[in-house]
Image 1 (cartoon, rainbow, N blue to C red):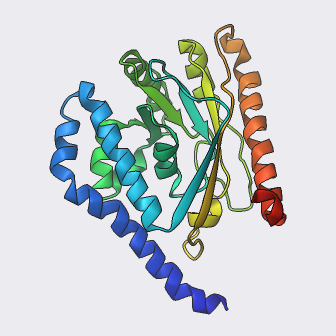
Image 2 (cartoon, rainbow, N blue to C red; image 1 turned 135 degrees about the vertical axis):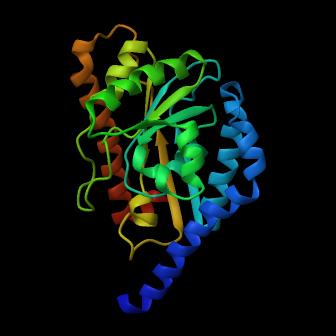
Length: 254
C-alpha cells in the first residue's frame, strides 16, 4: 500500500515547492519594493501572510486557531512554537496578524527566491558560531525598538521524528527577559503529520493551532531564564499530548 503512495508523495512535495516559489516570482517587484526600507516591513509582512495562505490552501491544509489571549497591535512580543514541519513558517504567519520577524538558521538563505527575501527580512543565526548567536540580540533589539515582534522556534532545530518536543534553548527567554516583552507560547498540533521533513510522508488535512496565555517577563531577571524556559515548554508539551489524545479519540476533536 505504501508503494502506491510514493508517487503521490513525490508529486505532493514538488507541488509544495511550486507553491513556495511561484507566488514570490509573480509578486517579486512588489516584494522587492517592500524591503527597500525597514519602515516598510509591515507591508512586506502583509504580503508574506497572503503568500502563506496561498501555500497552505494549495496544499489542502485547513487551519483552526484557538486563542486564549490575543496580541495587541501596539505592543511587541516574543512568539515561540514547536518546530516539526516545513509548513511551520507559513502557519505562524497565518496565526499571528501583527508584524513579527523570524529568527532563523542561515542555511535557509540557500533556497532559491525564498532565500533572497529571507536573508533581507529575518534575523539570521549560525548556531555553530557563538559570535553569531550574540549578534542576534543586537539585531533583535533594533527590530523591537521599531515596534516589530520577534518569532523564534526555541528547539533550535527540527527534532527527530519520534521526539514530540525537544529541549528549548535559553536564548529566546533571555531575549524576552532583557527586553521585558511577553512570551506567547503557540502549539502546532498537526504539522508533523501534514508535511514533516521526512520526504515520503504527509498529506492534506487539518492544522490545529493553540495560542496560549502570555507569559509575563516584567518582574523577571536573567536568573529566571531556566524556570521560564521550562514553564513555556511544559505548556506546549501538555497541549501536544492533548492534541495527540484527540487523534486517538476522533470524537473528542470534533
